[in-house]
Image 1 (cartoon, rainbow, N blue to C red):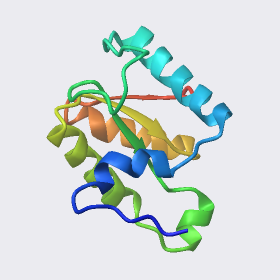
Image 2: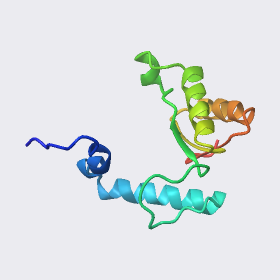
Image 3: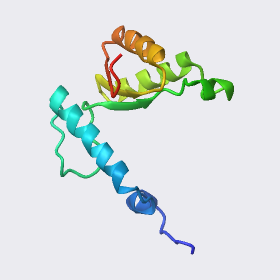
Length: 124
């Protein structure tokens, strides 16, 4: 089935094109709740959309073994991009997802030199 949108309408309807499993939505809400409670971000649970600037920046560092085998961007390239984006969004807190604890430590140390704090689901 084809969907026809008027010019400029995609950004309004895009969110309705994707259907997320309720478990994923619950996990995302749990993460936002925990971030709000630990970092006093002022995130409102009933708000719709992306949190306002200066709240946090979400980053996924692809540095697991499978990513390295596929010649994915190196740690430095990804880190630099995430730091630039966080700073551009006026965020001083980065929520980092990564499967590599050593890269989480390295990313966090590098972020500290830019006055950026890092939190993650896994203690490092």
